[in-house]
Image (cartoon, rainbow, N blue to C red; front, side):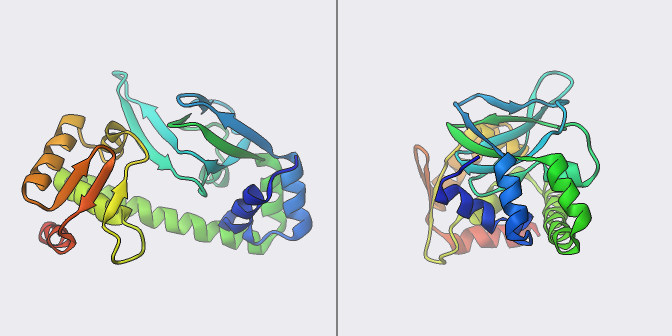
Length: 230
């Protein structure tokens, strides 16, 4: 399939494809699929056969599972420029372990999983690239387990706010591209608790909330809260 230059650039930059030879990359792109999703549309459901790994080009994707009582638990929120489902392939999985749904209109590229796996088996460099990606994700998951089991809801929300800032040290504004209840689920916080913490931080003049915009008024004080909890 023929993709525009922006999509090809996003694909080229990903660790998944960085070690590919040009002919390997082109072969993957030729068999890839482009999915245009409406808000609330499923890309795949838990238990579906794992036929593709994916790259989010535009919009946000929500990965979630349903608890036995039917509650939704957000596992991850996938931002544009990120890949997902490759870890399942790397571990030899045959099915998607989560649901994937578009939070907003989204564009996603699906890469043939069997074709990519065959390339992995034939390229040491590509395997090392995948191992590096998995190592970073494992480190991230360990941090997540630590936060969810050892720290309270305020800590989880404050650390998330600090991490959502752009890389510029002077940046103090966050735009919530996804609904607040989705962020709350991602942080394992009840929506009413999430709102209550935001109100408390606002009353303490640490942040200011205006619809989907959150301004960090006192970054030093927020960082101090995290250090106390640690």
